[in-house]
Image (cartoon, rainbow, N blue to C red; front, side, top):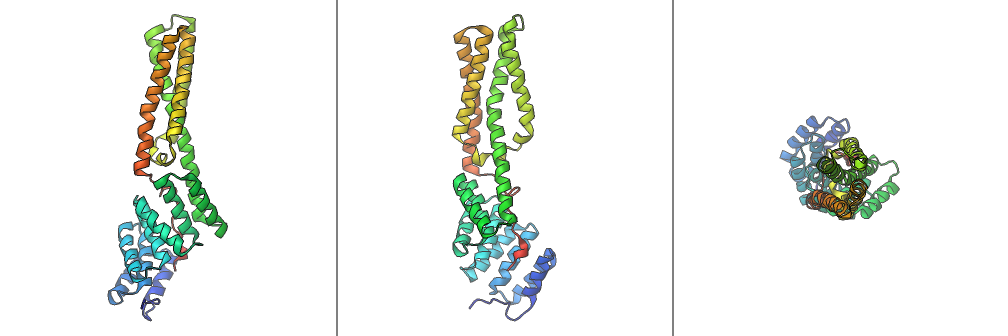
Length: 295
């Protein structure tokens, strides 16, 4: 039989008060001492996991939550804590499995729903499912800081995704047109402006977008092949148009356009594929569990 109250000891209740006060170190010490004499106290292990998360000791929290789950496989909060700990150390697939189980056991747990939403985004890049889960969390609790934090993080990822896609269009245009201007025209013709000015605009766009693209790891989950293809086509059209304006030669314009498409595609496809393999570091923008809800 699972011990739900610390076997009459008030250590678990006292530890909860300490966690509520964000005094995680004394809470951990108290719980570890308690669990040496009450190793089958599932609530104690679960609360130890929460306190360890508060100390940023996620690997230890995984172990504590796992012990709580061994004692009580129906403990939704323990699954949620383990999901959060896994997520914080970038084990998104493990976090997804635990968050899914937590939602199955407690469909109205807005924190579990938010964690599952972020893992759906990281593992499957399923934005529709992400939005559905966040909406469920906000329906359960419209004031959920956890769900709102996840939604804010998703919007940040979207902004960075758009910025990277725009850079994939601007970068080849800048390289091809400026190099083409130096190699072909060198400024002797008034038509040089068709190459130099679009090239300068592309460089300026890259500089403006740089703050949003310097941390590409935040973008990978939503950067798709469709976006990469669109950026490559845009780069090709701009470069070809500028090249034709400068040279009045279709072969030269076509060569510039195709070169831009190739540069954009070769730069963007690896980013999209890397995102599909690795997920992203979502914990910076994702939900941190509300430890005031320790139970």
